[in-house]
Length: 395
Image 1 (cartoon, one colour):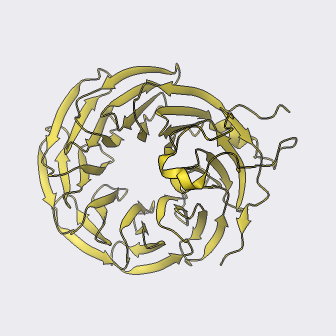
Image 2: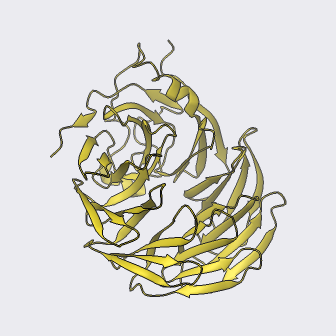
């Protein structure tokens, strides 16, 4: 077997700043990326070419989401959201109303509405057909850092720097309940597939599980030794996977609240997480410039994927699960052959590879500015084999 194996399919260049978020169309053929250079770019994932540069924002673009019918919605530090036609590249609407930077946004499953959160401490709901603001949801006393929707699109959950979550009725704009219990800012939120629970991650180093109907706190997931920075749920809604400033990835049982695995390997904070469709693997991105593949059943690090020369800030998987797209502070997107990577572990550990040694990949003391290649770093587009470290005993 040839080693190291090349998994990088494409490198997409064109941005002039950090790529902070990526969305992929349902057919997996196009990606939309947003950047600190004030632009969005639309990419052909088959040809590896740029289709459009969407340039209307006057500040860093912070968030993006796609509608089922082929529109993109972006949010920016210029206080606006913009709606784009992905086929023509034309701007359809400029949504103005926020009084400060837009930090996060979510589109309802039917593609009719978008909810946005901002530094102005509000959530706003917009009609995508008309571009009109329908309602402003007030009540938080800190910026909105995270937003999530229930699967039916009828309720939104916002997380704030005021340490609370709020549940909103999107149709009426009514605040249904406030979820208070964290002692630090809310950084990330995920709603379970059945719409009954929400999981929140916080700068207080914990995650919490909440009942969306009653507002009751069901579990506190404690174990991280740094702020929770990334969160993903398995498709069955039974487990949560979290990443943290403590550089670990942890797996939790949402029913019992128990920590199943604490997985170590990254040398800098975790910035992004995705879980595969079968719920057996997770991929993390880190400020140490690498991606890592984890076995969620065994609690082991299977593979390190290198190629980026800056912090990995965004991850997404195509709907068919064959490709992984990452965005980085190195101003690039990279497209990886996820199907090939996963197939290597379908029947157990492959042979003939070299144990992971991350010591030369990045200096943890410089992760916030990791936009340049680390000393000795010349591992472009390569992977190295399973770490002997894997899962550490639960504390």
